[in-house]
Length: 221
Image (tube, rainbow, N blue to C red):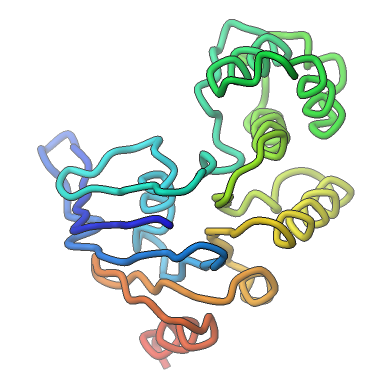
């Protein structure tokens, strides 16, 4: 279960505090429910994912994670730029208490990411796509109750996109997803419920189709 309680979020700009991206957001995601975040550009979808994943903090309110929640897949989970891909995977494994299975997990991530010899090179030499592949593979190496995804299946060439899609299907059989995707078909495939973000507020819908309809009703005719 994940509880989002009165969450407010805005960012500093060169001219001081910016607008409230999220303002008084409240909802509860029950166990074994996959949720799609829906809204226009700038509605706060990626911001909310980062808050749920713990890589960002609200200005006010709190997020309680009563389940095992991944970092946003495709975002670097504490990668150290001057360490190699291999060293970073070992580093994250140790942080998460998987010291006894490091070599097995390293080989899994290496095979999944498909970045070749770059796996032995520093992260700061990677393209953003390579970092996303590594982070995605590392996310899959751990068992979480909720996996967080922000358009991660759009990373890479056609073969890797298919590989990522297949991985998502396997995850859906055993865990829940919290995801952002501009593809309506992707949301319908993986999500049962929906959260529509509009004007800083979050609206929960038990049915993803109802959330999509609420969003579409606000679009210019």
